[in-house]
Image (cartoon, rainbow, N blue to C red; front, side, top):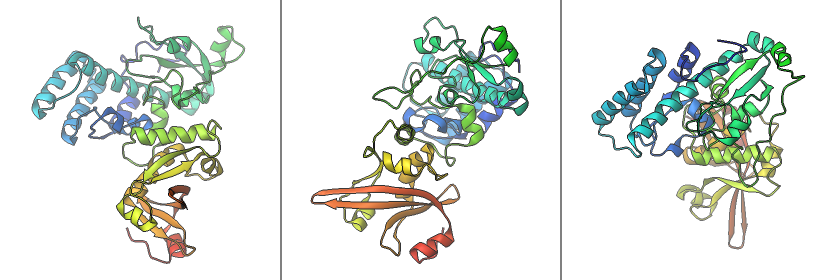
Length: 368
């Protein structure tokens, strides 16, 4: 990897880390582009609306060929036409735009993840502890991305967790590592001050398009999204609410729905079908000490435990969803509030559990 220099176009340099990132992805059928969100893209390969594993696998193979053999957009378009004809797939959008979006987004994200893996190698970080944001130089730039051009921030700055490019469809921005010596040669006594990405009225970071508010390489290497399953837009919105709550953006009493009561849950808890299961900002802040209480975990686990876990009452008469996810057991405690016609269900805690703890709390043996 070239250090302290221009990186060139993000589609020019295939390398092993980028290929490994892409190969690790699981083919995921979808109905909409909103079915896979943010960091889940580092685990999932999807083409919006491609709703069978067979067709998604074929598209994945075509992108993998481009990564490994350096085939072009025109080559991919030929593969695209063949795959569409073979599977009889009816897609939305104009062919030229659709194929370019699929091709460039996947390649740029793979290269971004690969570069991140290279730049976070201990030896590289030791000599190049700063990273520089570089605008692509496109004729129709996003003004926010252009404003970040040539800005240098520490490699561990929180900016890179949500604004590591690409930061939207068609974004060709890229990052290069910078040494202390080069920083001084540039006339700087230290790195630039990273911008505040919080925006009033939204949890979407400034300058970052929806579903791009994550670092592809970080999500890939740290496995931040729990389990090899897609994260939807709704689940990502919950995770964004959690992040904002931890920053104090949402006051005590503010809440977001994380699941709803189905017929069985509603009958057991004596509430109406569809009653929301809510998570409050103050509950989130009280649980920051729990390792499982991460934004991604809150975004994914409550809904999936409500849909696939077991609703159980412990020896003290308290309700909870208990279930396994990705080979691990979880316990989501509930509090039911009834005042007149008002019916509310609150998620009061979320944590890992063990089979022996279930026996102790609920008096039954857990069976998978």
